[in-house]
Length: 237
Image (cartoon, rainbow, N blue to C red; front, side):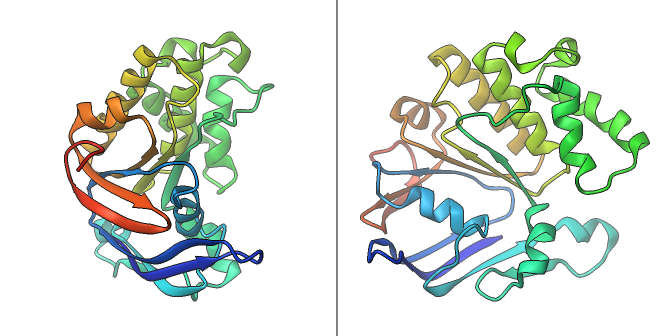
């Protein structure tokens, strides 16, 4: 569960990026965050990733990861969380960026494995899990290829596989189709829907009206730093 409670973000230059945003996203939801450039979408994402802090209000993220082991679910208050705990919190979130952000000197397998290595996963688990993830995104045959040998759509699928590497509860896709053609855009979105059906919370930040209208999921529209609409349907909801 993710909850923004009357969140305001003012940058040092006086720009009000978010102005009293209240928003709740339940576990397992698929949500589009839409709005024009400068509406506040990027700031909302940065706050959720704890790259920025809210000026006022609170952001609560409740992870259900530990429910599998019958432990008390973790609850993060991003307005109070210490910098020391931020890396642990970020393991709950997988992020897919518009510009892919792959390591050019690493193979597809190595790019995905790296995300697990940095959190200390044992090699035997990495060797077992990476092929399974590549299968989900239909990249099994590209395991040994380098990013320069892949199409834009394939590179974005690698980025998506990397986002899944540590089994996060939340996937944030920030303009995931911005650098690929319409056919590949539809493929990436279908993969995100597939991942959503596996029980993940999926948040897609986008301006692509056709895709939003096609998939008919919950749409939160931001304008001038405020949520102006929230419902199921297209971008005109």
